[in-house]
Amino acid sequence: MGGLAEYWHGSCRARACGHCWSFRRQSDHSPKLSANPKFWCRASTVAIMTQISVRDLADELSTSPKTIRAWMRLQNWRTLVELGQPWLLTREQVEQIRERFADGNSQETVLVPRINSDDPLPGLTVAELLTSYRNVLASLRARGLVRTNNAPTGDLAEYCAAVVYDGLLAPNSEKSHDLVAEDGRRIQVKVRLIRPGTSKAAVFSPIRSFDFHAALFLLIDDEAGEVEIARELSAAEVREHGRHREHTNGVVLRIGQARSLKVGTDLTEQFRVAWREMLAQ
Image 1 (cartoon, rainbow, N blue to C red):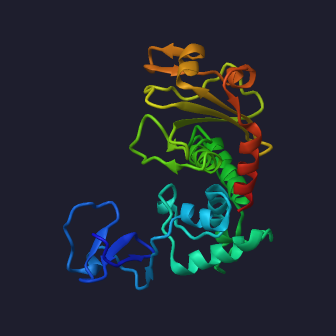
Image 2 (cartoon, helix red, strand yellow):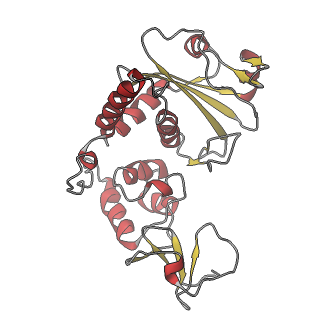
Image 3 (cartoon, rainbow, N blue to C red):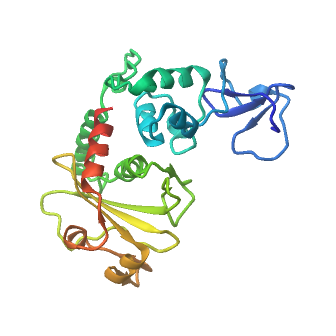
């Protein structure tokens, strides 16, 4: 957009040129513009975005970008489709951040109140939603309609990894890694739910591409709702300790290895904190 004033519809990521008021998608880097705003967006409210980045604010306020982003996630400023994308801040949000972190302000984080609705789900915490979800799946499994319980676990693990690594989630189409950490490393995330009777010989899903710097292996205790183990291994360590399986054409690691291996980096405490904070949202 060449330095022109830019505006964003809050509900759809449509970008508008401040001079001609034409719209385009955020992901569309071509010069094509649509003359009809409704082609892109039905939103009625336009928010003016600033050029100020989280890192700019962190330098100004003498705090870390990770601390600011952690606080912003709790404010519910972004929709699910925006998770993992770079933060774009309105003037009002910038002022709220400055007020929150000015002069070493250490007041407790206050969550934005949830919108009242006849639907009870928006009023539940993540932990309560997951409990309801498990109960629904248990009923469906008892009727022979589904076979697994893993549906949301992978996405939640990736979200927590983005928090711990202070990184950006990769597009769903990316096969070799799930996020890029703040230090530039490409991270692949593997997670398993652990239930009573789960064999230590059970494996994580196979790794078929090694175009990453490190892989995170996460075990979640399904009954306790807690992180049991979080271990980071380099790509070389995964190759060394994993086992190649012909029928899946990939390298797998057993959950028993995630518990017992002494190599790599133990990130269990960091992930326990991130997981608990996520469940409390």
